[in-house]
Image 1 (spheres, rainbow, N blue to C red):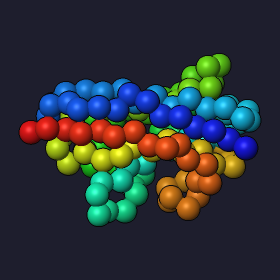
Image 2: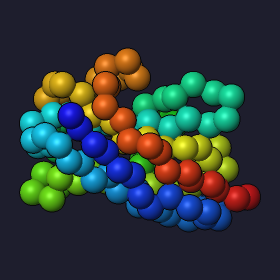
Image 3: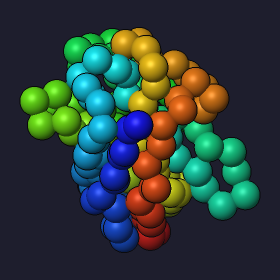
Image 4: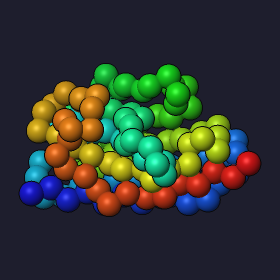
Length: 124
């Protein structure tokens, strides 16, 4: 079984930055892709960043491209999401997720393992 624990969320003003962390345990974290998703109230859970098992091939949707950076430290079983130039539209619960593949997927259903989420609120 896999356990994922996110941290680093909080309240930030528009234009500010936050770094989210995801601590993994329970299996060999370094063998599998990782994704970060977010869910705003009343909306679907959407992928905002994904990375393969080596830390390569990062993917970002246009909504966050150039502002968010995903990374991982396999030696520490950690993944990160650096967010900058935050906008009120980025307000959501952010989730770390992993899947049973070395390569990232683009859809929520492709990730069977999830953390509990961390709230990010961006004030205008």
